[in-house]
Image (cartoon, rainbow, N blue to C red; front, side, top):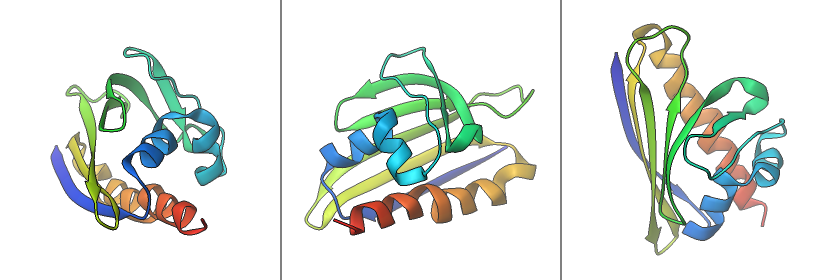
Length: 127
């Protein structure tokens, strides 16, 4: 199991980024895929057409979200923590993804950079 930590800069306010990460209608706008999302801790979510599924663990409005991502029958929980920090150019997104299965690590990192954050960056750059 591996961990991945990275900071990303998005050209939007922390409030806008938080909405983009937690509102199912906004998620559909930047992913072009169906999304199920709720800010209720313990609720399950599904984004990118079901390619990312898990359980919502914690929300701090406009500041933080914590999710458990499911990877089949893996024993340890894979936890994603996203913290949003105001930045002079928008929002600094602090990402920590723990307990990524070794065989999925490269694909997950590419997914964060190219798809997840890449789509968010493109979405906010359109405004």
